[in-house]
Length: 323
Image (tube, rainbow, N blue to C red; front, top):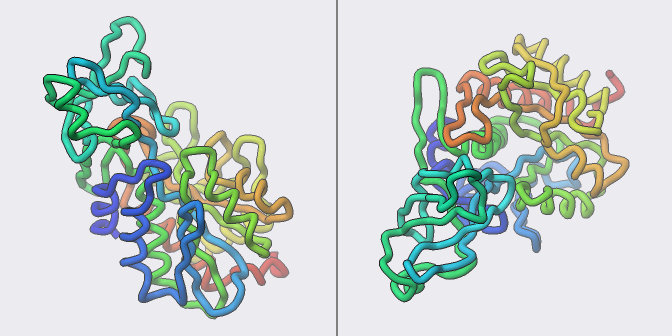
């Protein structure tokens, strides 16, 4: 899984520009699934089994970034946020825009925001810059993946870890159930792809894979295992799914945590697409979430995968009668 995560972290995938990420995921999972589909919004749907899916396992595949919105006479490129990226987290960081490395700067001193943010790509004039950069070009921070002991660190660990986990789940499940694995597009733009995809499916169970911050405002701790959602924001996870997930963890001797907070794993968006849906989620603890160098535990990643592989193999959508 670590090699896959490192590769994922090297693939820029700003919301709305998921093509390269989608192609890589397909290259990894095609031998293990019955079929793959791409819908009009760019969602990737991978189907396990030949029948109609009984339930869906989902993670987002896009990340926050910036978009070129203006080129000035001096050759600097003004940028705007795509998704929830914060200007102060980009300042003085290396970025790759239009295949060219640059540095994010700000011409404001009192307040760091996108009205003052720009990228210096080393151009001396607008004419020179316009030969390389087009308005609308997207960029993310330069890949800085590293392994430190039992931890993976990168600017995009919170986005790319769930993808790596879901790829590994697909490679390891052994079940006769029909399952849809949804890698949703534009998750950073209000879960647009997830809402659309769920509105086309006639199923009743959804389990999301996402991340939860290990910070001063949260009881979730790095290295303490997967976090099973009880409530996120104003949405309650289905109590039967929560019970099935925790029972699966206990049976497999997997340490787990319970999450109540404001993270968004997609429950609200999934329900918006299918109001009668039973929803649950499993979160990977991430330290420094949203900051330039996030940190995840390799053991936690393995245990999220193990929990959901066991959940799919042993329970699935038909086992709510045992809850």
